[in-house]
Image 1 (cartoon, helix red, strand yellow):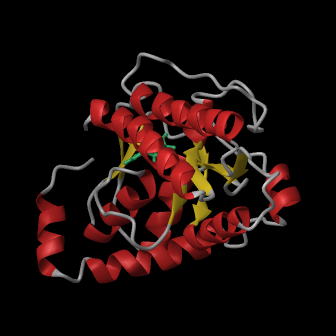
Image 2 (image 1 turned 135 degrees about the vertical axis):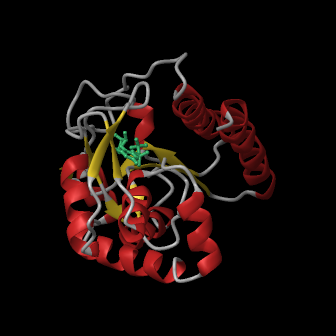
Length: 243
Ligand code: UDP
């Protein structure tokens, strides 16, 4: 939607927060992302993989912005002895997602609840591994509680991989929807496959996700169902062109 502002948020935002952390002597965590691996050529992705990122594509503003933020965190750590924590968050979902931010879990659930077509981009065989929000929060809290020697980056996410067609089928079943699946043009540089290697998180945080996708989706469907009970929200989403 706004690529320039996306890079500015990641880079200027990191500079501002790191400056503040330095001034007040605070410990600081960067919510980095699996997008730093780009369209990975190594699978699953471990933290020592440097990634495969297009620097000039329409997705680059986010990927490169977050990569630059990681660089800034490690430079403040080396140069100013700042106490940093960097986690690379893989696809996370759950209640309170925005109904139209365009991500796949919210899109599919809202589409199914409204009886609209489910929009699968490309052939739907691309994969992601989805982590439930409560598990993610637990990992972030554990990361903040580690000793200063644990800087990361540490991958946090659920290592169980699903294709977008699997996900569409699961959502349609859970909602009991009659929606049909339609194919749409895939976004440029859409990663084909993504799954975290979470050995480091297990080691440093004694953490692994506990919520199976079906259970997390059931709670997320209940959230959106309640949200869509509000006629104004529902009407706005019905009238919006599909993602
Ligand atoms: N996707 C899809 N239909 C949608 C939204 C997304 O098939 O309505 C696909 C998208 O092309 C990608 C995957 O779902 O392959 C995950 O997309 P999302 O934007 O949620 O996360 P990210 O690509 O950042 O992992």
